[in-house]
Image (cartoon, rainbow, N blue to C red; front, side, top):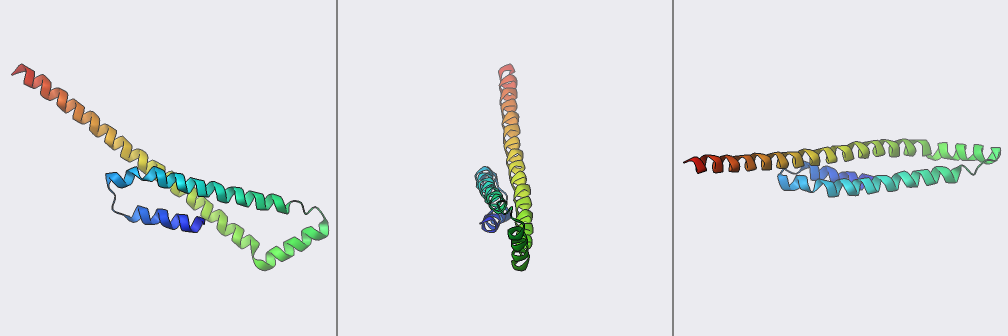
Length: 124
């Protein structure tokens, strides 16, 4: 699920950057954050479900079985993808804020130009 969502976000980032595309970033960031929270919650639930193995024999049996099927590798891979998703989320939010700042600054310049036209037009 996380891999699929990361692929969708990467595809959207590869599109030509336009003002309209940058306004879509909050939706994609929100969707990515939702998946990120879902995966984090799922991994926490799995870890908590395993903690019930307080019996020493069961705990050793679990560690042996987990190492045989590669649970630590999968867990490491999931943690790396979670870090990538967090970084990508921050990047999307920063890109949106930059585009919003550009639009607001442009509006301020347009308003100032309009005021200057009225000031100089009124003197003529």
